[in-house]
Length: 334
Image (cartoon, rainbow, N blue to C red; front, side, top):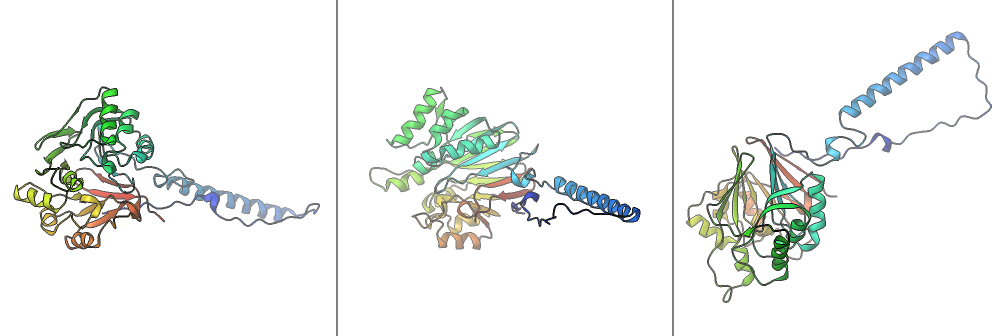
């Protein structure tokens, strides 16, 4: 069940009508009038105190939950789909640690750093780059330099690009071990598991579209916490999806991070039939040049029965689970 963030209105923002009283006017009152005035004044004060108490209990005056970041409750997991525009950035936040999957473009790093600080995240158990594209890997070097990171997982296929070199240099500077992952690898975190289901398809970068090769060599990972499951597919396209289906991989999940920003070349009918997501999150930038998410992809998601949440429409999206129930909050954009 999705829960929308509401905008709270501070009591101080309400308009007040001021009555002007002329100076030098003397008021005389008999005993009964004065007594009535005092009773009325006490009544008004009591009423105001009651209203103020109600507002305070409900989180008014700017101090309620709605005015701040979602907090992590004990025994729960928050999966943050951070709004970095036309790129991916996911934070899995648990009781005893955190994992970041992708970090948007280079210019997104300050937004990401501010977001982590806002949520009190000082250390990442793992920083994972799903594949070698700047909109997924570009900001990871700054994240590594600004935060404590235990391990860095890099793509199995990289290209000779500055953003790739910068990430590796940052890891080397802070002496963070960097390595690739392989299918079957499992990361355990606070009772949850993040499993690498696949690491891409075989293709020759010299004879194929380099962009598609990188997309189809994204890590595909499944996060399980209690009875709830999440699938992160990077920029996997339909060709990759078909190969995963042919391998008989368990793709059935509750929450799907939609592949390739909602491209027409991802989220095929057969793949969605196997995944059966109840919720689908699209990390996409507002008014982007690619036309993402594509109308065909949105139609397929609707046909699959998934409730769609988009960063370009909702801002930062946080999926919270206690292992059984799922709730979703977000920052509604104007």
